[in-house]
Length: 187
Image 1 (cartoon, rainbow, N blue to C red):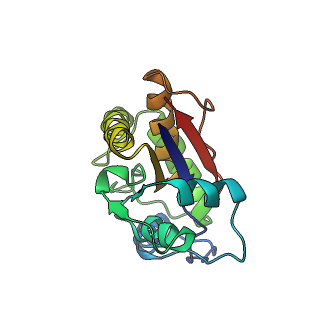
Image 2: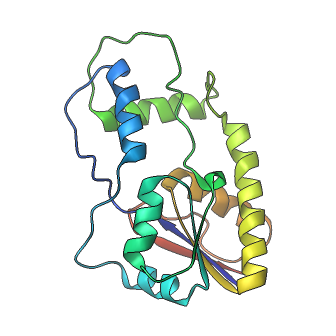
C-alpha cells in the first residue's frame, strides 16, 4: 500500500506588497479562495504517483482541489476539510501598525503558533489530533484502493507524515514543503 503526500501548486495570489496585520487577515481569505498557477511541467514523481493512485484526496480549499485537477483531470477525487492547512492565529484583536510582506506575517504567526499561541484558532495540539485522524482516514483509503495520493498543504502534510511514520509506514522522515513536491509512504 502507498500513500503519497503532495503539496499544492503555487497560489495565483501574488500580492506581496507590505500590509498591516488587519490587511493580512483579508489576504489569508483571498489566499484560501484562489487557485494555483498551471505549470508547463510538473515533477515526474508527482505525475507518476497521481497517475498510479486509484483515488486522489484533497482538502476543500481551492488550491488543493485545482492542483489535483491540473495533475490529472480524469482522476477520482475526494475532498474533505480534515485535510485543510493548519490555521494561523489571525483571530487576535491586537493591532499591529507595522507593515510587512504577507510571507513575513505568515512566518511570524507560524512561529507564534508553534510556541503555543492560538487564540481562537486551531492549536498545535488540535492540529496534531486532526493529523492523526487524517492519517487514519488515508490508511482506510489505502487499504481499499492500494495506492492513493493526497494533494494537500505544506505544514499539514508534515504533521500527517509524522503520524504515518509513527504508525510504522516507511518513507522520508519529513514531507517536502516545495510546491508540487511528492513524498511517498508505504506499508
